Image (cartoon, rainbow, N blue to C red):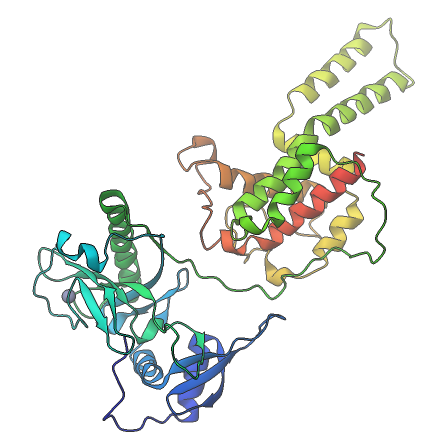
Length: 428
Ligand SMILES: [Zn+2]
């Protein structure tokens, strides 16, 4: 919590201060009121612009932290302050917590005297402005060097809420703080604080039934728009859609599924899976028919019959990724894929894209788009469904439902949606 500003010299910022804070927070400065600095989002992407306001004293503290080298974390919502050996994670919280004032005396915390400056002692910190008791959980390592604390945010993690003239709004959030033994090199600080946060959150859950989670960083992609053309003519429907396919297709749009990107991905994938055998049979029949019609086919000759046999056998042994390629080749016009990849997606499908361990898409690579897409779709599906210790996928790590990568899946989900639509339509 920020301390009250009374008695402190009036704070003012110069243009450098403003641009420094704009850069770190990714916001644009609008104006400064008496107690608040008002910002706006640089690209609100058509969404109603909430103008975040940061209390003046917090802004000042953030500036001081930036000056000594503090920065926002890349993968999680939170800050690291190497100069102080301090890290702060924003956390999500389960519905109920046993750490309430009613149960205060039931808990004791492994605390020791330490060298850090802490704002309050467990189990509670009093919010004077709103006369409210916030839980404060803190434990200290055996050698007194390290503290882990869950408590109201410091200035760094000030929630970006719009300014409220009544100032009745809750202007704090609970964060998890790691205090190491003084100045710590950046990568070591990140590694150590992640490690401690993971252990602590696990034990709070397993031993005390308290659900906390770190919040992966969420950036709104600016290209988040439908790349398929939208028709203005609403017609009486002509596309028959099997029951289970209809359900799978609606899941990703389901309000309740919002935020579950890997599940959206798998729903669309299951639609493709539904059609794999059909396309596969169609392809096998086509091949046999081609053999039967070929000029040198002779039903009296064993070699001709064997040709058909081996063609059938080959199609029988086709792997899921081969079947997927066949499905895409059969059902999705190449022009649709070209159209899809003519958009930029911020380099999402390229070498520098955010999703690791999956093939990139190169429209000029010489390999057909259908084949490249099949490989990527299948590899990504494997990363979502296979556990890390599956030897067949040892080289690709599992893609977790709530992770840096999952939050950036959107273009891949959109690609799968396009494939699903084409497959459904071509199989009516
Ligand atoms: Zn401490």
